[in-house]
Image (tube, rainbow, N blue to C red; front, side, top):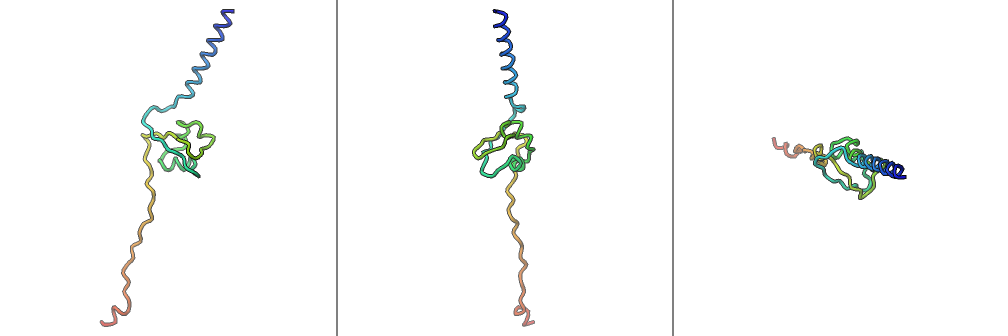
Length: 105
């Protein structure tokens, strides 16, 4: 009876170690948090931070099934370079010369 109990304890102990190993992220460096907004996808978020979707999945395994608004994702800070929002370039308009300006010449 003692041997069976001991075997069960060892078996469960080994299982819990495997679960703990799965939960640990592969990265222990600096991170930033990103809160998902309506309509965002993992691909969009990866582009925003100039990283690969796999970098997001590595630290956020639940994101593999999809992301939802208000979900907080952990982003690697060593690769973090948030993309600047592209602003439309202002067009330079050349001054217009009308015929009235040149009529006196």
